[in-house]
Image (cartoon, rainbow, N blue to C red; front, top):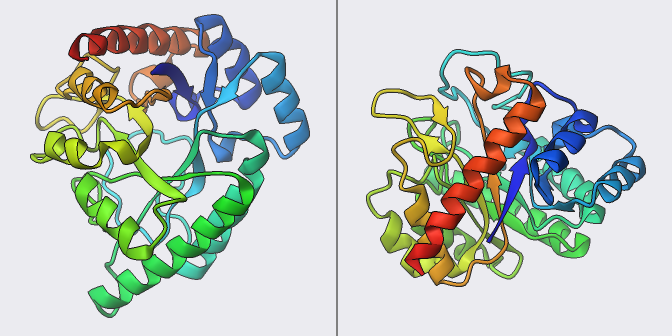
Length: 287
């Protein structure tokens, strides 16, 4: 298991500014944020090669297959991130497919999306049908693009979505018949307080193909903390996945408009690298 840095960790900086800062901190992989990528993909890949980066988990601009409405986040400057995105499901699916095609040549370890909300559909069955159809289309594009999709369960305090536990996410993937192309991403903030977390990891951890690592603050505080500094069982999650053979990138996701995003990008990258190495080192004791 190796540390990577997702670009959502440094929303105060551009793609071109992220690369030297992450490299100087010690990272060897970067999780791309589609909204930060300049249009010239050939030049982007040349820059990644210049700094010796592999590409870990990528976040696309449309965050879920079904629409999201009424996302609950703490007040802050979210730097232009569109958490809700288009209201039309068909538009969302097309844009996700386009993003997957674009990201294929970057050879990412995975591309993450979430399922989205059944709210607004005429019935739960209609929402589930739309989700399965969309997931199959995205999985087909991913397979043709040489990419694997990682579904991220989202915490219910943020919004009501389908697949809010690891087990439910695995069930929906199986029901859609796309397990060959679609795995699971565990976010230690979103899943860290699930009452069935370690039971779910034991049952489905072999399907985890991506990690976002940040910590939950104490109860009642919605802000996210640097890995290893909060209430999430981050070290235990990483250790449990190690036992199951997870051996790819673990992405620092310093999703912190009130702290890390206010710092110089070089300092933010160093904070991320130091924290990730600490939690990864401690997680080895669980193997």
